[in-house]
Length: 413
Image (cartoon, rainbow, N blue to C red; front, side, top):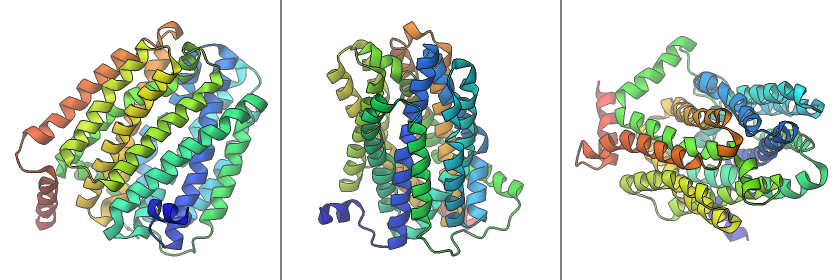
């Protein structure tokens, strides 16, 4: 077991490990909130649009504030930011305990909105701190470690624990579990000593925000990957928005969404391990990302739970492998001074795709939710294909060389 853990998290820096464990605990608890909120909204209204609205209000701050979060993460001590934001989130996440009927759903929506305002500051700071602690020579391991532990394993363990708890005690108590996970995360991150965990940037906020425009203008190929990520996110979050209805479509109780989420995370975990063992070339990464998108359409044509779970696993293996490989490639080509802002840029484009996916859910009739998966997936495929095509058709030079040459040109000018 010790050897397996060392292979999964080989960096022996204790502070680095504390940050990874803190993120794993926090994200595991957040999965409780995501499922509890969706189930509660559906049970109180009987409409899939209510579950979709929960996700819309949760994702909306990302579109507005993620870029500001990257600025804050570059200006202030990241360790203190994470510690204080965890404690604040623990208090906020208890608000849905007061929701007892459909007229009080605004409390649920407001809670999701506030939590994600905090997340817009938290996530870029957390991502930058992980890379900072790992060091520039360990960028790939930092990205894969964080993905495997804090995103995939947390998203497997959280739903598996949530399944019996949501059945036994109901969705509302899931918010208590999320609050406890934030407190535990704060206690763990508190083990990292105070220090200069920032880049010490001195520009004005407006000046730093303007840097985002320059990053994308100087790196059009990075911009292409960002656009492709929108298409990759739309079907994923459409599926999350209709997950409760899809569970019923499969002949399962609404709590079955915990299994769907856990299986999706398992597929993502396998995709992360693939990249950890066999670094993917850019063209194979693009193939993985594109191949995953239309596969979601298959979910419209099956009512068998086993087949649906298999489709989800295969799709998320391809999606996460392509996503991580592109993340590693671009992070290596960008200087340390732009790391936090680059993380925010990617999260912002992801947020566009996420919001688009759940907005479609709010507009669709419950009876059409499952069949709508196919056109959503196919339309998203065309978007990502059109975004990535210029990346590989414009030049016969390998894309990793092109990115490196772009960086050299930027430095020389």
